[in-house]
Amino acid sequence: MTFQSACTADRANKPVTSADEQPVSEAVSGLLALEDGSIYAGRSLAAQGEWVGEVVFVTGMTGYQETITDPSYWGQMVVFTCPHIGNVGVNDEDGEARIPHVRAVLARRITLRPSNWRAQRALPDMLREAGVPALDGIDTRRLTLRLREAGVMRGALSSIDLDPERLVRMARDAPDMSLLAPVAQVTSSERHAWLETVAGAWLSAVQDDLAATGSAPHVVVIDCGAKENILRLLAGFGARTTVVPADASASAILALAPDGVLISNGPGDPEQATATILSVRELMGRVPLYGICLGHQIICLAAGGRTFKLPFGHHGSNHPVQDVRSNRVSITSQNHNYAVMPESLRGLPYEITHVNLFDHTIEGIRHRTLPIASVQYHPESSPGPHDSLQLLKGFVDALASREGVHAKAN
Image (cartoon, rainbow, N blue to C red; front, side):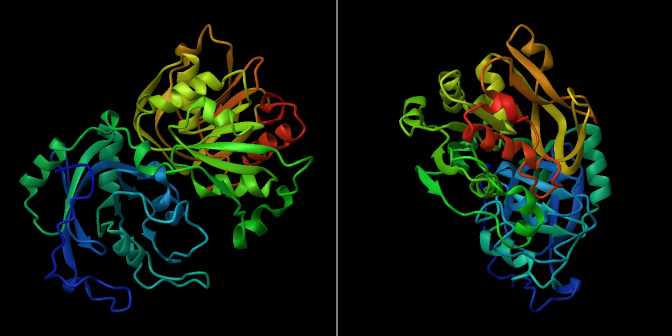
């Protein structure tokens, strides 16, 4: 069994469609097994087959479409602690990528008939078309508590062979995410310009912040699995944006004459992103740098710091982060399983700018003299609150005024 979807479709089982909304008695059963031997039963509402992946829980009460399409969740089976998801369906505006990236959706209840004027189709339909499984009826409270107590674990999900012992063995045999390099699975295949900006509901939410100042700076985004709202907001704030693959060399990036380089979010252990770490190290001192989530970790690794894996990660849109200079607290959107070791930054020319008020992990750093800064959370504020939008706008404005990210981006 590989870590990629082992979708051995059961053609005899008719898929459950939102239009039919078949009764539970006619739905296909599904089973999730964790490597610790615990078993969770539910009904299978989307793709049928078998999968293995890393099981994590997300605490956001809204924004399920953004979570499901976030490339940072590649290879992960996501447990939604919100008891109902799918109520407002899915649409073409709210995704963070064109397709779902989660390995599986696990929920207490998934709505089959959405009710919202923006809905274009039901959540199970989108998942089924993308070959992503979904189990509802899962005891998500018990599952979440188990993950909090024991930490992130590997899991195996099946809707075609519900032998618990076999699934537990599959989970234990699944590859460890820390040994994989999933950035290569989600990065752009080639360089391209990004022109799309925010629209619709997002535009009305952030229009007061979209007035760019100065000239249009050229921002090169190293795509480690970039959420599209980062790119949309950069364009909305006035940046001319070019996206390059994660393995782009420093010389290739500098040849594009960027005013600044942003290293994006992405999945997996940051230490596996070796090509990006090397490029960022060579870019330091030659062009302003800004990192988001995995990009933050990559900057710290390139500078000589170290990272570690959190017990169950930070996944949700309700994480309080404090700016240690102003004491201002922002509620942030987060999605990461790794963090930077504070002691590894001692003796380096960096200062900690932000800390997590849940567990006091590092949430932001900046260089003392060079235009280099980063944050562990998501200032593009998707799907979470808009408390941190000024960070991205500050980065663009600083480049436009040629003052450098260390002056305004934080």
